[in-house]
Image (cartoon, rainbow, N blue to C red):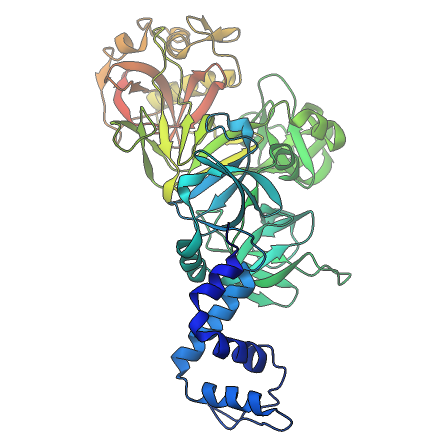
Amino acid sequence: MRSARHLWENRFSKNRLIIAGIATVVFAGLIIHGVRSGRGTWDTTGTTEAEEETIAVIETMSDEELAQMRLEEQLQDATASYGHLGIVEVSGYINVRREPDSIDMKNIIGRLNDGAACDILEEDGDWVRIRSGGIEGWAAKRYILTDEAAMKKAAENLEDRVIIDAEVMNIRSAPEIDPVNVVGKARQGERYLLVREEGDWACIQADFSDTMDEAWIKITADDGSANGHVEHGLDEARKLDLRQMALTQYDNIVLAYTEGYINVREEPKDDGINNICGKFLRGCGAELLDTVENDGGTWYKIKSGPVTGWVSAKYCLTGQSARDTALDFAVLTAVVNVDALNVRSEPSLDSNVWTSITKNQAYEVLGQLDGWVQIELDSTDDGSENDKAFISTRDNNVEVRYGLPEATEYYPAVEAANAAAAYRNSIVNYACQFIGNPYVWGGTSLTKGCDCSGFTQSVMAHFGIYLPRVSRDQAGSGVRVTSDSMKPGDLVFYANKSGTINHVGIYIGNGQVVNAASRRAGIKIYRWNYRTPVAIRNVIGP
């Protein structure tokens, strides 16, 4: 097994004298006392004859040759600590696992992005045991370059990077301490591409986000201690300690702990449906921003996902009790970063696309493979087995993260231009009362449990509208409408990979549907096109 240093020395053996001279004379700065502008005249006072000969050689080199030698010296420095250098070459990232097992998602302890470096410790068939970013584990061998190919790709990925020294740090949208500008967490040993430095702050490339290009880390604490430092080198693994990620995503955690949901309100008072801006379901997590006494009780101002507002404290846990309970609700989810992403029945680009899913919707992960994740879309109402749904993680199309569910943006229908619109609004608001209740296949109870068509059937029956029992038959009711003309209360239908309708939800406006989603999710709000709809029906009337 050849070391990175051995490879470097072998590759550039013809230039050893010059490299040594540059390392000694130019880059280490041991004998150079100064140089005038441009290529100028070397100050050779006190130099030896051998050193003067080296300088003479350097004087004959072009700027391009000097830059190349500088790159090679940097490459040597960056790779010297790796006994057997490996560099990842993949579209997106690969997982680092505790054991060489490609199926068990609980086995994942980290990830290596394209271009990241690792030290290869051991090979075992299709797997290699590696060390990178402070973690040791197993990675798929086929995605890791070695020897000359690794050195070539390493040279392409040398950059100034921020290396995290603190145990955990906030990543912020602006270089200022503000509880509302936290956009992520950086953990000890992680490396982020440096954009620029401004005082105690480092601006980094926000490769973890699809909504921003740059973010900020305070690398020097107020007491002068180092939270991080800048180093010219290679990227390495990022940790995925699931327990740590679930508990450190919030500085001051608030956990919804009531049956069903808590209404998130625009002001700290209960004003019926007039000031609701979101649903905070049992087990959802949030950042505590403020606390006030108002309207006969204590209110917390929270930020949870896309929702910022006020919740009644009597339905929440905070502090250590919230931290102790949070892991009971933490899940692994996939969040899509592109407008639409193909879903396939097998983890292969050769597998047929049977639906697509939409940006910013979170999907629970059922399993992870390198380059693919299997997600849960919803449950059927006809007793058939769910179609497998695989999505590709290449090109950072998907962010896979472990943590608490978050609040859902929701605004009740409170205004109506006419009696027909008011009637539809009452149907929608009635349906949304049951968010958080359980999914039960074959059930029709809005409180004890129902499946997707049982939910729509029972909601509509409350208003004297009678539907068939299963979704594929409900899709024949009423009249067809288009997505451009659908209104709150219309039914939105989805199909399996064979094109057979097997799921339904109720459109509630604001680009959302409420549906009895699955055994895991229960009754929940999704984006109306969280997967490709195949039919929309008006069963209410004008």
